[in-house]
Every structure is written in C-alpha cells, then in structure tokens.
Length: 601
Image 1 (cartoon, rainbow, N blue to C red):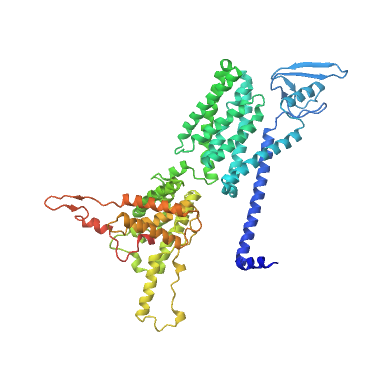
Image 2: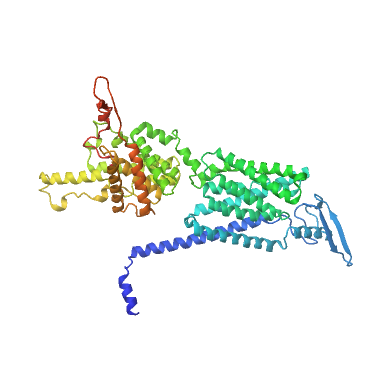
C-alpha cells in the first residue's frame, strides 16, 4: 500500500461495528427489495400474457376439441388437398366450427389455423413467452422512468404492488367487458371494433392519478393502450383512442376535491372520446353509417369509467392506506368523531390546531408541498390531549393549574404522553398513515423545556436550602435531559417538519406583548434556529431556502392573526380599548405565572 493510500485511510473516519451492521442491513434490504420488484414484474407479466393471449386453441388434426368453437368473423380458407388440388371455402361469422368433445378434421384444423394466423398467433406456448418478454420490456421502461422521477416509490412495496394490480385489473376488466360486449354485438349485428369504444380502459389511469400521481398515470396510459391494442388488431386507431381517453381522465382528476368531481371527469372523458371517435370514423369513411353507434358506446364507456372509479376508490384508499385529496377533505369535516371530541373536551386545543392549520397550509404551499395534507395534519396533531385536557395551558382556567401539585418529572411525562395517546386514537379511528406519522413526529425528540428548567430550579433551590446537604453526592437525584424529551421520531417528511415548526411558533407567539413585525420576525427566526441547533430537522429534506420561505410565510400569517384591535368610544368615557373595559376578557387571556407556556404542551 503506497503512502498516499495510507494517508487517506488515516483521514477517513473509522466505521464502528454499529455502522457496519447498519450498512449490512441496508444492503440486505436493498437486495430483498430488488428481488421483490423483479418477482412482482415476472408474475404480473405472466398473468397479463395469459389474459391477452387469444382464446382460440391450437388444435391439430385428430385432436379432441376442449370446447365448442365458433367463427368470430367471416373467413375464407384455402389449402392444398391430398391430391394437390386447391380447396377453398367460406366460413360465416358465428358459424359453429366444432363442438366440444369432437375430433378435429382436416377442414376444421385449417379453419382454426386461419383464425390463429389472423390473430397473429403461432405456437401458443411460444406466443405466451413472447408476450411475457414484451410486457417485461414495458415494465423495464417504466422502472427506469420511476427510478429517475420518483425513486422513493420503488422502495414502497405497497405502492409498486398497487400500480401492478391496477394494470392487471384494468386489462382483466377490459378483456371481460370485451367478451360480454361481443355477445351483445353479435345479437345486434354490430362491428366488433365498435365494442372497443365501450371498454372502461380509462378507469385505470384515473385511479393511478388519484392514488399516486399524474406522471405515473401517463406511463400507465401508454402501456395499457399498447397492450390492449392486441385485442383489436384490425384497427390501429384503437390504441390511440385508449391513450387519449386515459390521459384526459388522469388530467381531469389532478385537482379532484370531491367524489362528485369524478362524474365531471367522466363527462369530460366522454366529450374527448366522442371527438376521437368522429376523427376515426371520418378517416375510415364510416361516420354516416356507424357513427351513431360508435358515439353511443363511447359515451357509455366514459360513464362506466366514472362508476368504476367511484365504487373502487374507497377500497383502494383503505386497502393501501392512501390519503387522496378527497379523503383528506373528508377528514376536515367538523362532524368527524375525533374533531368533535376535540371540540367538546379540549376547545382550547381545537382553536390552537385551527391556527396551526392556517400557518402550516400557507407554509406548505409556498415550498410546493401538499397544503391540504398540512392542514389535516395540523387539525389532528394534538388529538391525544383529549385524554387529559386540563393539564394543557390552552384548556386551563386562569385560577387553576394542576401542574402546581405535581413533580416536574411527572408533569413532563403527562405533557409528552399526548403524542402516544394521539397515535393510538388515530390508529383506532383508521386515519391514514401519513396523518398518524405527523402526530407521532410533530414534537420529534425535542425537550419539554419548561418542566426541565423547573426541575433544575427545584434541585438548585433544594441544595441552596440545605435540604440535601447531608446526602452523599452519589445519592443526589440527577435531572436528566433525556427524561424530559419526547419519544420521537424526528420529523421525517417536509409536512411533519412544517407542522412541528408551526406548533412551536404559534405557541410562543401567544406570549408576545404588543406584537410588531420586528418582534414576530425575531421570534420566528430564533425558534427555527433553535430547532436546527437541536437537530430536530436533520431527518427531513427541508433546505435552508425552504426554511427562509417558511419563516417569511409564518411572519406574514402571524401578523394578520395578531393584529391590534381598534379602540371603540364609550358613552361618558374617553375612548377605551374593548379589552380594557372588560377585565374578565383580559383575565381569561392571561396565563398564570405558575403555568407552563403553551410551547411546553
């Protein structure tokens, strides 16, 4: 080893055994994830290939037919007879070719061979393997795109499973619908291509956009459209029709806030489908002959898309623990059980949560995060306080403070317990995991500062008063900072970090007297610097630029909330402020000297 390498080794920090074990665990987890993703892709590819494989069996002369076979369309068959003579005949659409259990004759074998040729299928095993290979190539392209655009998705097994299932379900439902509609088309003597306009293909893209995001829905639409083109090889415009309808469906639900908006999305999809159908029929010259049928089934297909999505969305939200904007808006309704309980048992906490919701929503919007999720997280972040509301300053009466009768360590435990209680309540009411995470992380591992300082002060007063002078040094009880910290974890997402900062800023702002822009700005900056110094923001990806924007938004919002009230003139008196002539209001807003600041809760 040369001297340069030796110098580098000396400069590099040595890894502890714990660091090495952690790296090995991460490596094993990464390999396990890769195996899972490859296995999932293989299984879904095999299932899709089986579904897309044409249903006509490959039968040779002398084989026994497993089921009855009828001609799906009119056929003209030509082949060489035994004496080298050319034989030809016509098979009409719907004509019975062979019944189940019968032996395949030369003529029947030639008809089935012609059907397979038209479907582009040779040996069925080879055709199956070919489809698997083609689908795997599509999956590889989607994988590369997700890895570049949204790599975190590949680490979430439930999300990759959801995306795969949506693709499989969309293809399966389309295949089943094609079979059912084909039976109806035969009775009504409609063109087989017409039924292609009725398939609810766009439902998969709409669900992908709602449950995941539009970018994934874009790739989803491309893959589904190409694969379903196999079912309609006679018309190359069908994949274009599916792709355009799917994209419009996905676009129309990006800002979907109500479940009734799905009907509007279906109406827009029907409009676009109609325009595309007119274009296709004009190209073929069939607009006057079959245009009315195509437009009717196209509108029916768009309507069925809205119905399928409306019926299945709650299932996917619950099964895969996904909080769509629709779900989040439902959680903001005042009649939600947890919010009603918070209003009745902890009205001060409820008001505190509403104010934090305003701060968090504004901050999330300015840095490009989901403002709706930030508001919902703020509304529910303190639901654990309903178990012991009287121990939190915002719910206490001016003349009563239960912490005066408790040791600081016990008070600290009670204050910190609202996080654990909130998580349990949220899980019991089946709130989305993103909201549960915000509840669990909104204090991180920060210090219950007020009671920690009170414990130190009591220890110092006891020593100064001689109460523990006769005790040995090792018997003197220590005040450990770790005993006064929240259980964590630290905020893992930007929304959790925003709510953590908003909670602290809103609580501290209540103690400001005559708030001015300069005072509020100084308060906000100091508190954010304090959280940074305490390493509470180390595990989320907020940048310094984000924190600057958040601080500015906090300052602006607080200034609007903490504005000074105007003075109203009173009869027979000089103009007085309303709160000066109502001492009961002033008393209700003052915090007792013995009470902990709101930030401690």
